[in-house]
Amino acid sequence: MAMQKYPAAGGIPMQGNRVYTAHPVILSMPEQKLNDDIVFSTFSLHFCNPCCLGFGAFYNSIKARDSRLLGDYASAWSYGRRARRLNVAAIIIGVIFVITAIIIFSQTMQRVNM
Image (cartoon, rainbow, N blue to C red; front, side, top):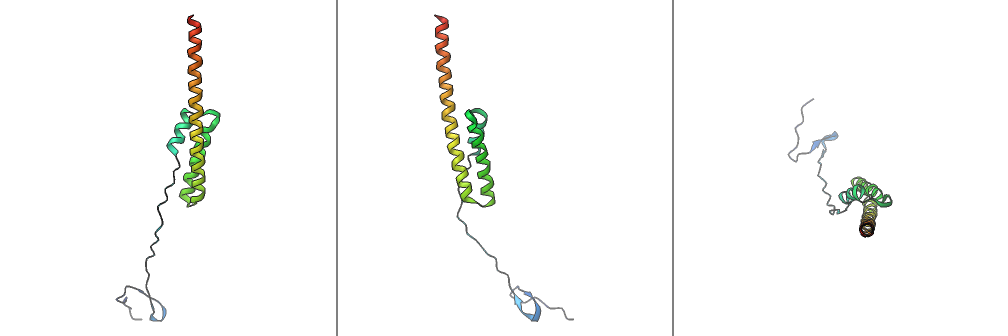
């Protein structure tokens, strides 16, 4: 059995002295810019969590990141949008609670000082 040399084309010799060449496949995919708002959700979870909205936002952020890594961009977009809405709701309700607490505290202190 004689040693076959590779042809000049760079292919791999197969049965019957046919040469098969491999060509790279290049896929151009558009850049997927999906926000999962994980930092915003972590802030809402730790510092502003009325009615467990911060926890719901954090959960949806994690689901958005997992879906994006699996290539399911439609679900990732949906989870990310829901996480952002829950974050905004948590911040708004949290700020309202803090402002109400400040008003109640100041009114109580005025009555005590009189």
